[in-house]
Amino acid sequence: MTDTILIVDDNLTYAKWTEAVLRQAGYDIAFAESARTGLSQAVENPDKFQAVFSDITMEHPGAGLVLIPKLRSRGYKGITVLVSTGFDYPIVFWLSKLTLPLIGVDGLVIKKAMRDAGKWRIEWISKRNGIRELKDRIGHIVDIPNWVRPK
Image (tube, rainbow, N blue to C red; front, side):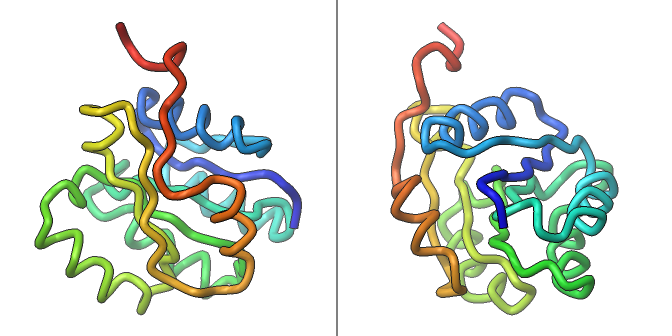
């Protein structure tokens, strides 16, 4: 695996915020604006991406939830993280922590913290190999750089 992370998101603002945090941690970034494109990039280059960070709602509601199991079924061994506004609700967040590891999700990023506080917060929900390195490099709660946030 390389030090490249694939961000799959059709919302440029959130994608840029995620990119800024990951670049600060030393990662190279690739983008896809749909789950379909993200899947094909990851499958065509199985060893290129250390992690895939995906929104849930893109070309259809739940596209990111469909993407992760498809990646896993096609042999993707890297880390998978969902980025969503759905996790803004405490009950959804806690239920997600219990259920999403079953489809291969390793972490959750809460968009509300990005939007409201300028904080990029990741909650690790899996203990898959490779997560420790990513966790050590990125941390748990990171300030989004001021130059990325709107004034």
